[in-house]
Amino acid sequence: MNANNTVSPFLLMFVRRVKDFGKKSADQVVVARGFAEFKGKKGSGMRELVSNTLEFDIRSLLHPKALLYIPIGAIVFLFQVYNTLAINSLAVKTEKLREQIQMTSSVITSQELKMDELHSIRNIAQDAVALGLSPASIPPVELEP
Image (cartoon, rainbow, N blue to C red; front, side):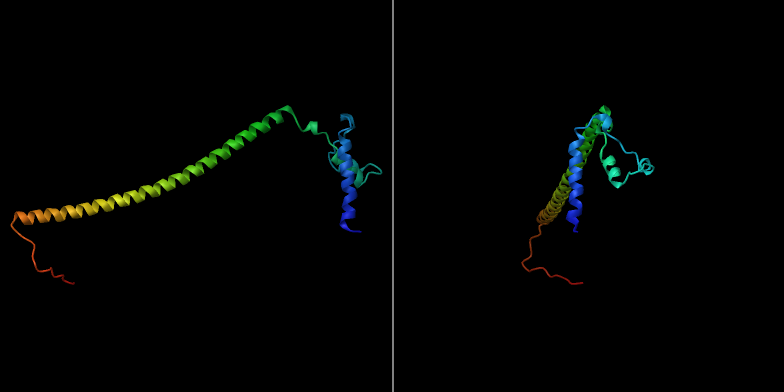
């Protein structure tokens, strides 16, 4: 006997029970509280235990307060998820802006250094002309340390 032949009758019985469940009235439905109720009864076996545990009253689980709390909880949960995603998105944007600011700052600093260098060379040239000095025709000699 293979596994498909073993499982099929159980599934067929389960489907039949589920279909028949909607036809039963509330006083016919039994809620199983545990295995201890069935232990002392004569003729009760695994089949009755499974059938009694599968048959329960769903209305006893769904109270009006529960139906009110579930959507409220879902809304709070979705709001929290949205806020978390928004914070992560803002953190990524902030990091990109921080990198752009650092790059801009380094370019500005580089330009300021170049400007100071050119300004100091111009000042030296003006001071030399004021003292009557002229540029030498001989190229400069570089000394190595």
